Amino acid sequence: MSQLKDRLDQGKFAITAEVVPPRSAGPKALLEEAEILRGLVDAVNLTDGAGASTTMSSAAAAAILVAHDLEPVWQITCRDRNRLALNADILGAAAQGIENVLILTGDDPAGGDQPDAKPVFDLNSAEVMTLMRDMRDQEILPTGKKILEAPDFLLGAAEMPTDPAPDWEPSGMLKKIEAGAQFAQTQFCFDAGIASRYIQRLLDKGVTEKISVLLGVGPIASAKSARWMNDNLYGVNVPEDIIQRIEAAGDAKEQKKEGIKVAAELIHEFRNIEGLAGVHIMAPAANAHSIVKVLELK
Image (cartoon, rainbow, N blue to C red; front, side):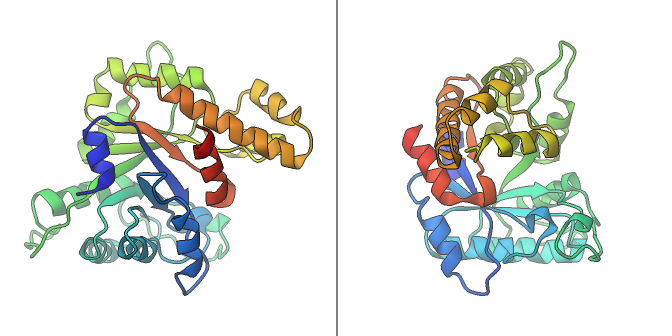
C-alpha cells in the first residue's frame, strides 16, 4: 500500500516534497536529490516538464525511485499526450509500482524551452482523473475493453488556496472530488491566517471528509524572490511583513536562512489547523537541500 495513502487514511500529518527530474539520461543526479529526503517525507513529487521545459520523464523518474525504495508522487500533465499515450503511460507506470499520481493541466509550451512545440490537451485534467479512476475501479479502458490487471492509484489534484469571501463555495474542489480526487496539493500559501480560514471553510462544508488537503509551502530564497512570486505566480501572496523580515536579515546568505525559518514556522502553525491533512514543500529549483533545512527546523 502507498505509504502516503496509509498516512492520510490514519489522519496523520503528511509531508510531501517536490523534486524536478534532471536533464539527464542517467539516474545519478535524480537519486542524489531524492535520497536526502529519505525518512523525512512521506512521498516525493516528480514534476512533468514543469515550465514546459525538458527533463527526464516524470514516469521514468518515479519508477527509478520505486526501484530504490523511495515513494514517488508521479505528476502527469495533459499537455503532451493524447488519450492513447495516456492509457499506455498509466498502465506502464502502474506496472512499475507507482501508486500516487498528481494530475495537472501542464504549462503552455509557448513559455518553455521549445516554444514551437505543439500542445496536445486531448483530455483535460478532470477527464484524465476520471479515466484513471475508472481504470482502477472498473478495470476497463475508455473503450470498454477489460484491463488484465488494474492499476491501484491514489489520485491527486492541484488546488489554489484562497481567503474565502462570506459567499465562497468550494465548487472547484467538489468537481475534482467527483472526478476521483482523493488528495489535493495546493499552490504556495505563506499566510497562516488565510490557511486557517481556507481550511475552516472546507471543514465547514464537509470537504475535508472527502479529500485530504496538503497546503503548499516552501523556503523563500530572498526578499527579491518573494516579490517575484507575488508578481508572477498566480494566486501566491507573500505577506509584506514576511518580505520585510527576510529583507532585514541582511545579505543574500542571511536572507536565505530567514526564508527557511519562515517556512518551518509556517509548517509548525499549519500542524494546528483542524482538517488540514499535511503540507507539500516546494523550493526554488526544487532544491532538496533547502527542503531538508526546513524540515530540520519545523
